[in-house]
Structure formats: structure tokens, C-alpha cells
Image (cartoon, rainbow over all chains, first blue to last red; front, side, top):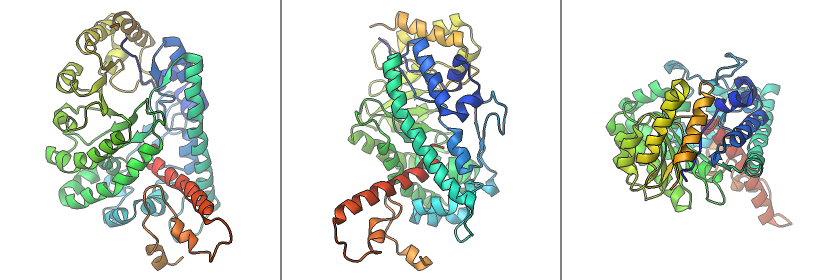
Length: 372
Length: 59
């Protein structure tokens, strides 16, 4: 059978009768929503909680860069990441050498005070809120991460559903853009100081590999997920992809594979123009997830080496008719899944604009036609 | 710790915030099992590494 592994985020809240605020603020409600979805739709695998950014951690730490439902934004809108303006980037351009020399020290001593309302900078007088930020943030993170183990067991025992992923990775260049220099600052740096950008990516590499492996499935049955953001053309030039993004990411993927884990390439956006680079990876080492690319073209290009997931457009699942969803999914099953190595899923994580009726149509047509 | 001493800290490898070598230097001879002290120090220290890197990557 063609497996179904939908990445449902705020959709799960909608299905279970919770607001975006409820599942973002209380991860136990998010876990509950994921279980209700898994049981109600008879899926093969689901993420334990795809509304991943738990407000308990972000609010304990005092992080400035989120708009949270029910707090900074309306209660029925998914949480928002708010990138600062170029001149207020969390990492200044003069910080490159400090980051390169000691990434962990830089993050604690320079980055964290800038991104937190409560953490004070080095040399400043400690405050009660500073101390509480570390204590509560650490305790909250441990509480949350430990909850995923119970959630995986609950999905398995109550719903007959596997927990879909374990471990997290982002490309060094995406970390620089997403959390440190900001996208605009990074694009300027790629032009004005490309060697420093490359060295910064190289400094981040071993730590990102460590984080990915530390959270990977000990049984090696489900993949580590890389969330791929703005490292593709047109966000960067082809040369910047070839000279910075890919050379600093590829070794991480290869090492994760050497240690026995697949990586789910959650290629958000359009990445097919870089397929030749991805084909350098060992056969079977990744599952290529399709977002805005044409899933039929992706199949032609990479399926001889890699399994594929996704490719069912979110706009179709949100605004299309059930019969349109059925027709598209049936076409995917016939043309992409026919030779195996395909996992049914939407193109991108499903939020609360997704139609329950359409998700049911996607599930039913996969069960009906996705049989080998 | 002075700025100079901070700079002399052993390189912070992945999984490490306060290296064992730095902590060990605070003591003279240990009367007991140094191995278990080192292991537990490094295990709890790695939690701090996890904290900051997950704030960066996951949150």
C-alpha cells in the first residue's frame, strides 16, 4: 500500500476542536489533536506535534521573534516568525569572527541576550528574570522533549500510527539567514564577505550534525528531518548554492547516512533546479519531499535514487473540491507511486485553512487506489 | 573568570559548554573515581549545549 504520512499542524487543532492558541500554548492539547487526527483518518504515520514551536518554551525564555496566537496575533492564526529589520539583525556583521571562533559561546553570550527580553548581556548585572529565563526555559524544553516519547507510544498503541520523524536539521546557511543575520543581511554578506559566510557555515556544521544525531531515532526506522528554507535559487544565486549552501550541508547529510539514518529533505519551495547536486548523495539516503515543484517532474528526475513524498498542493486541499483532490491524488498514485517509493502527503504542512473534507478525500483515494 | 581566562578555555566542541578540563582544573587530586565525575559532568553539560542549539534550530 501507498503509505499516508500527512504533516498536519493547525489542521489537527481544527479537526480536534481546538483553537490555534490552545495547541500552541499547551503542547498536551497539540498531542491530543494529533492523536485524534491519526485515529480519525487511519494514517500510517504522523508527526507527534507539528505545531512544533511550543509557547511554553518561547515565553519562558522571553524570545522576541514570535507572534503567538492569542497574544501578539489573533487566536485562530498560526504562530508567526518575525524576522528583524536588516539593521536590527540579531547577529551584527562584526560578529562573524566571534561566531566562527566559538559558536556555542557566541550563542549564549551574544545572541541569546539579543533575542530574549529577559536574558542580560555579558557584564551586566544579573536579574531575577534573567535567572528565571534559563531555569524555566531549560525545564520547559526538557518537559516538552520528554513528552514526545509518550506521544509516540500513544500514537502507536491508541491509533496504530507511527511517529513520523525524529531529529532535526537545518542547513548552516539557513541558520545564518533565519536566526542570525536575517535574509537581507545574509544576501549582502554573500556578496561583500563570502569567505566569512563560508567559514561561519563551516563552524556551524559540527554542531548542527550533533543536534541532528542527538535526536535521531535509536531504532533507525524514521528519518531525521531537514527543514530547507532559503538556500535555493532565487533566494541565493546558483554560485552561492554551489559554493556555500551545498558544500556545507552535503557532508552533514552524508555523515547522518553513515550513522544509519535517512534524512527527510523537506524541500519547502522549489528546489528541483538543484536536483543534480542532491543526486550526489548515496542512493536511499534521503526521502525527497515535494512542495512547490511538480511532483511528476521530481519523480522523473530523482526517483531512481530516492523515495519521494508530498506534492499534493496545499491550495487544492484548502480551496479545491473533493473530486478535484481525488483526481489529483489518483494521478499521483498512478504516475508517481506505481513503482513504489512514494509517501502520500500535502506539499507543505497543513494549517487550519485546510479542508477536512479534502483531507478525507486524499486519505480515502489513497486507501482505495494505493494498493500494489 | 577573567577575559583572558575565558579565551583560554578549551575549544567548545559539539556537545560541550564548560569543558571537563576546565572544571577539573578547579580541583587537586581527587580521592575517588574521577571517571564517574567526568562522565556525569559531561552528560549534564551536554544538556546545556542541547538547550542553546535547540533554541537556535528548533524554536
